[in-house]
Image (tube, helix red, strand yellow):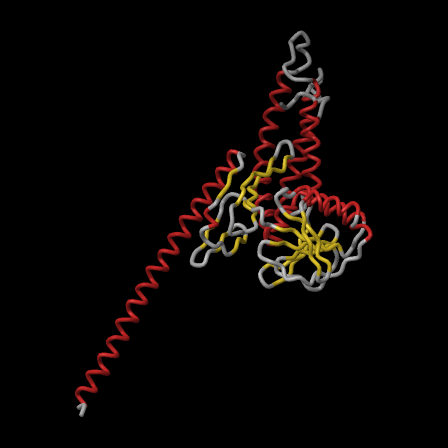
Length: 349
């Protein structure tokens, strides 16, 4: 017959056993978590170096480490892993994928100002279009977006419960020859992680990986809320890869770089302009002029007769104020045209 003391020893042994097992399991989980976090850090650090190298050199590169570890999410400028995150200082736009990624630099050139970013993508990325407003302007916009994106992507359409993708060349042919005669309904297909849906037209409901374009406005989710943001033809990659959040991030980075550049370019132009006026002063008619007359010239009464630089400088001053107000697009285009006129006149190389 088992005594009370023996029963007590058995219960105590079970309790100690459970305690020891639980302790070692917790230690194991802790080291496992630390290992995962270290691996994530190493992958993110390697990817960051590849992004910066592409941004600085302009040379495309490939990155393969994501094939060994599942990337969860990228919300510009943060990459979110299971146990950690990485913030990128270089403008980066991407569709996360557990496969080899291609990195390339894209730039928007305004002559005196250039905004560059890194575009990271995989050949598994798919872009679906639903033109609820199927007219010439919509088809022209779709064609422009497709031509802007990599040829490695698959492109197609979603019409109610039907979704089909093909190569870029085949889909461009579809836009011209077949799409004009089609009628499209709201996409009801479940959108995969590596797929983006672009709907043209006003819609009340939007999927997580979907954006809706109406005119020059794009609508999509920012967290749990739907927001609308204006966009231009330069914004295709941000809105297709990351929707409204990526576009808002791009606009913020663009404004900061533009404001800094406009201030530097304004001061530089003032300095060059004053030097030209000094060297091209008209009373010294026998002196060779190192700069074309159009760049800056004073007559006998010290009145300026050419204003190419003055126009450009004035636009840059107004642009600086417009950036703070958030409405600078027209002035930026004007400054680009005025800088081109300076180059054509020989004032700028």
